[in-house]
Length: 397
Image (cartoon, rainbow, N blue to C red):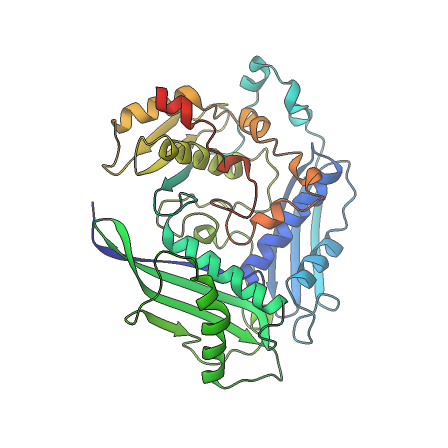
């Protein structure tokens, strides 16, 4: 196991084309579930130049204008200018209504144990959850800081603290590890775009980003940039507007940004654009829940939980844990505890986290908020899979 190394993770602002597609896909999921918690919905988007394409398959009683949902998300992301505009961009749709699926139309709170056993997964795959002691949220430090910088860029733009900023932006944070613990900020990378007709010299952009983004973002951090930290701001030069007018976007293309910034493994499946009865979405949340509780129970300093599902089974065919030699007990014992105290059946996950009703409780805006700044480790949202309510029972073993 490596102990001394440098590791970097990236994040993106809400106006990045990939994240824009993720948000639109999840906003469509939100609107279906807000009206019909039993809705079956899969939505994917692609965007380029001034054209957005939406493909959706659904079985639901809900009436959702997916084009208007998309325009609302685009407008919220800040695209109200000539190059790419929420009101004037072309939206193409391919919508298919599916026959009702009675086997999935049930009140989760009324399910018996026997009924949960009879609800199998319809996707196959291996899903990972990870937690460690690097941050208060029990997330790796690189992705946590990268998200924090992206959130700060969006805040600065929305508040017009830097009036020439356009919505598209990316961040990257490199951390130098010593003895597998964060020691210093090795590098910072920030790429922002400017509004058309508002070209600013590179020096001003750099100074503004340092003062309005980097310094406030690190103000309360224990580890801050030092005199040797390499800082790259728009290293490729000035980018005018950015976004879909410059490069394309696609739902599910930022899986590492959505999870652990590649510090831990993740599945190849997109998280956004899927209703909660998709194990390739909620399995990731369940695995994170288990890993976080293992760390909160002081059974290890870092833990990766692996869940493998086969089509037709309600339970994962494999539950594994890897503590990277930091466990207080063996990985085999930790995996056994996880299997004993966590219910990884699809319907049980949906019921425990109340995943079908959360959009209704959040005024139709729950999953869209996950689609930018990460689906896990969010301190700004009260996510059920971020709770550590199983730690006590794991501690007693």
